[in-house]
Image (tube, rainbow, N blue to C red; front, top):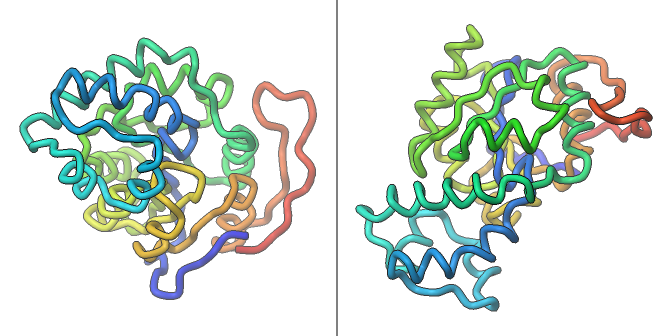
Length: 244
């Protein structure tokens, strides 16, 4: 069941929904963990042991950088290398189950969809496959802590105020970027940061699975909701329960 945080509320109906990609639409956490220690050896920061993963999921990006001993000057170098690895392995990336249906349902409900990501647009489109055409705005290549200006740019491109946009992501830095951009934030519990950590950021929604997103957001904006056939599928999904 999705959770609406008591302390958060959208300032205006969300006409535009801007999704993060890695950990929100695409299941890349295992890939990230599998490659992290190779990158640690290359850039000389602390290795991460398997039993540390859950602890690190409870930390924000800045706290993780400090924990691993990564100085600020190395961050752009590491990010560039990780993007190169992501391009190398782009064919391995898959969307989370239910994401194509979620995007199709939101589009059918009249929302304008966007992706704001530190990954490349080519990688994002490749993973989205048939769903790529549902995304009206792509703003990719954001720096680790530079998503706020990309969110504002998407709002301008869509012709809406940031207050009429909802950012959806799986990390605490996504929540920070949304606050800086002046838009509401909804969190997903299936990505990089833990649900407990995300709840502390006071999102307007905390979704447990992709199937909760369209019913909750369509309902909160006074829209009718009817599941539709996702791009590339042959059957429409079963009706989803309403509620948030």
